[in-house]
Image 1: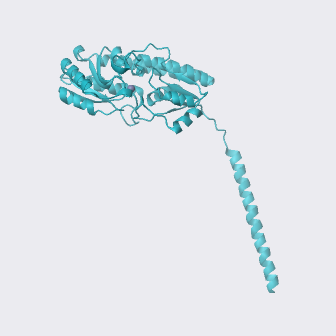
Image 2: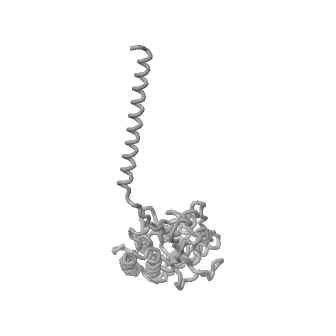
Image 3: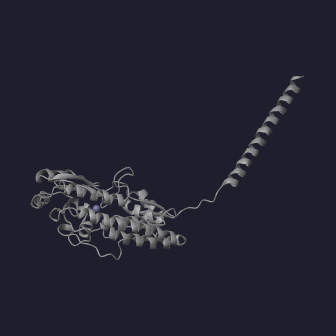
Amino acid sequence: MSAKVRRLVHSAKLLKSYLFVSLFSVFLFSCAGIKETKFQYPVQKKPVVLTTFTVLADMARNVAGNRLTVNSITKIGSEIHGYQPTPSDLVRASKADLIVENGLGLELWARKFTAAAGDVPKVTLTEGMTPLFIEGEAYDGKPNPHAWMSPKRSMRYIDRLVSAFTKLDPEGKEIFIRNGENYKNKLEKLDLDLRKSLATIPPRKRVLVTCEGAFSYLAKDYGMDEAYLWPVNAESQVTPRRMLRLIQTVQKRGVPAVFCESTVSSKAQREVAKASGAHFGGTFYVDSLSDTDGPAATLLDLQRHNVRLIRKGLTLDMEKNNGPY
Ligand SMILES: [Zn+2]
């Protein structure tokens, strides 16, 4: 075979290989195309609900079931009163299908956030509710926003969620109503349990001492007095006057234990305990849930955890502490 013929044969072989590879690629791509078309399921995007904090997200998930995607803007452990929305929060707000907020002046920061959301519908869960008011100092006369701390009032939150979700997703109406009823039954049971548990504390000892005045609704529902270092976390400065006043209250009432909440520092309250001779009774959850493996992964757990601590702390010097908590 001459060199010329060999070159020609070689070129022909190359061409053949090239054609084979090309055709094989076309075949593969075609297959991939067919495969993709064949197995591509229609993606059903669930409407996205954004809540301002984790406690509301838990309530919303209980009503939404699998029909809606529920997320919280603030993360677990965040201080929610003075939160500053990030640019990505604002983007998330603008893409949401519904924004859920507490109201009663809790999320003043959320104005920025809802303004960014433009036409996104918004529901305020405490709308139409008669609030309790903060007493004393700079926040005097302003509504106390922590209404979710009362199981009775939480039921109103659930009703508002059911109607807002029904507007958002009318086909889910029956599911939302059923989920709402189931959850309200749980709140009803919680209310009875808390009542029974707190009733075991002698009346003179029913003083709830916390960092933030976040327990007004709970205290009112179950016949307790409350005392705190500051009225709301938005204004959480610890002054010597505030500390002295609280120490005097603890001593005067003979309160065995004082408490603080998970989203703020307990340093000042531990000093109150030391100076007054009370125990530091532990950490409450109010403005945020705990991690899923913590003691307050849901609102129901949060309430049971707090009441367990209250009962344990305020009956420290009682002999036996049997009961549901
Ligand atoms: Zn708070």
